[in-house]
Length: 293
Image 1 (cartoon, rainbow, N blue to C red):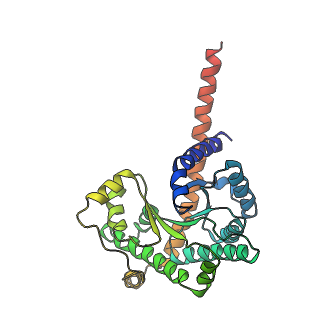
Image 2 (cartoon, rainbow, N blue to C red):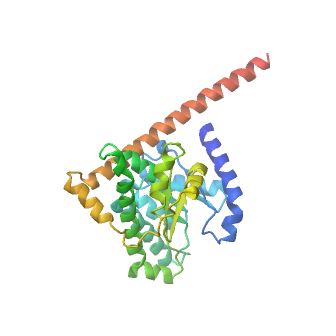
């Protein structure tokens, strides 16, 4: 498939570009992420084999395979981690969604430890600030969106810190496992820069990474208020979300809808990519045929 070949080529280029960072940090940073076509993941039972084949074919140690954090992929995440495949879990928008995937990761690590395998398998949980803001916008006034997004993401961070301080995680640490990190991601749309800055300056904390566009980074640097480090207990996130419940909005239903909508959108976008590549390929082929006549 030509589209997949193009994606692989770009991913390999990114991995090679980041390889010095990966080597210098002993695999903590310097990762490139490869998203498998959502059209190839309709059957979760085939996902681990597909991810393993891709990872082995690329032959770069600093590439993570993206797996959606949907309920039917929890066992896939565990099995992929057990197989030693670095994983980026996407489509996470709530504490419950994050915890389910984080525990799948930990289960995979525990299986590796039990069988004498190294427990240092790369793993990150990606939370899209932009997608979360888009998803909650129909339910709240525009001025409240940053507050709701920050509350939801802080709740995820609190759950992460609680999990990493548990006895179960401490046993994994003792065996050589590394903590998993949260990655806040933003889109490249200009109108998202202001919202991203308002959110990201409140999400600075240990074991988190902010993946942002150049424009967002410039806006964040130039912002007068750099913000304070995020409290490990999530600050006032529960109070904010309780007010949402009191106003009649079921936060769990809302984040489930956002996850499902984003999963459907990924399928739509990938189909559009395939169509665009096919059309461009046909044009190029026609031009080449005409030039040889």
